[in-house]
Length: 70
Length: 507
Image (cartoon, rainbow over all chains, first blue to last red; front, side, top):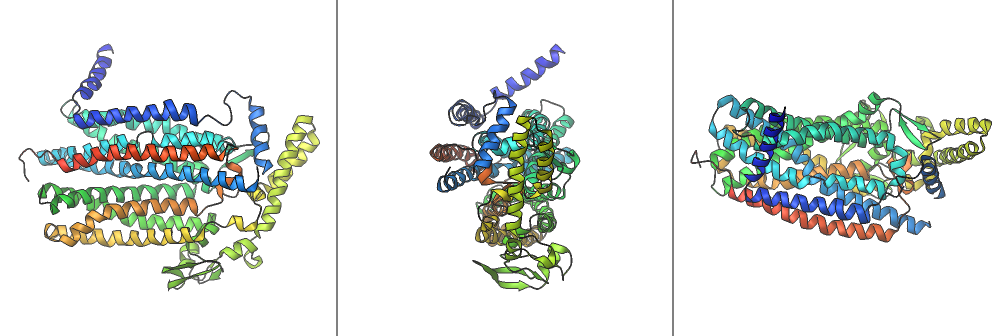
């Protein structure tokens, strides 16, 4: 089992190491993209409008109030 | 919130969602289709053992990887928007909409992301059979992802298999099979994936044709075109077939959308189909007509009645169509009943709860109409829907004819000398993208004002947040997406310019 996990680990590590110039650049862009999406946009600009920790009952009331107001 | 602010908020939230979805849709169809084209090429290598197929597979696999990387996580932004901009919608349908998305995340995404690494890096490192299996599982996995997303979208167009829970104000799944196997879900999935295959075929054809025009890698290019044109031609036939299936379903489930697609204001029997024409505000579209065809496509009967926008707005007693104003009144009763039910629940008044629940259930099918302020709000933008639909259909038929011609040229070995066919092949990728995006414009603009057909209009689905906030994030997205797109497309273009590594096999 340990050997299998190690083999899989090596497979990924060696593959990333042997990726060419453009491949490495792509991985860098993906990492930057993830940082912008999850580290900036989600944290500062896309907060859940209905707070996750709100009790279910209050979430229902909030939604009903919002949709029936208009 | 006053009407002006609400309209502005709704429009900016719509614009942001449309921007994100259009951007996301640049990559998805190519991933769906190219994965299969690569799998066919890989299978050819396994079958023949010929290195030229290995080189061909490797090149297209590399471009698949770039596209896959570019598209990664662009769909996540849509989910951010659900939580922030469309929180009422998310709460209202979370139990239904969440299930297919969760299945997609857990099952299909893991399947594709596990095997995509083996596919890309597995050359000479895993057994040949396992490598080929990984390529096929990547293709199957990406397409399985699409099923669940499209099921979720289809449910919004045709909310089947659901039950509204008045206590939580949420739609709950009553029948998983009805949600997944509704006619809308099946036709939407098939039409979407076949057009994705067609687009991917044009991607390969366009790049290969460019090589021929440049006098590079001629044999490689012809080999690639042979696979892609065959795949694309079969897909184009299926796009037309499933398009017909889709339109028939739209006629049954979303007659207003169909009327807008055809610019039909006055309903008629033996209704004609506009082959080429102009949309006119408040009047039937004019142009070259094919008698009876719209009736046949909508009802499978050349004499069948197809309702126009006026019939659907004002009602038509002869054909049992209820006027919008009556549906608006029913909707208002349903909304009031929901408020009364909640009040009764608070007061633990079981009699009132039973009464209001009965009233709500009796009128729930028109729930969304209760939010409309004017009957005209039930009409989608006709011009955009009409022109998008007709241009998409025209391109669809052009693709069939063009790919057939391409296959003939290939068979006669005359493609490499036919400059017109080669240039049309290069242009074909732009046309395929236009047709693909237009399909979504028809599907989504044509169903306005609804986020969920007849149940929840966009004005009620949107969160009460500042319009300025949505505007800020809209322009932020535009800038980020454009920069990322330029950076990533730059890599794609460099790889294309560099070309395949044919190792002296041929040029």
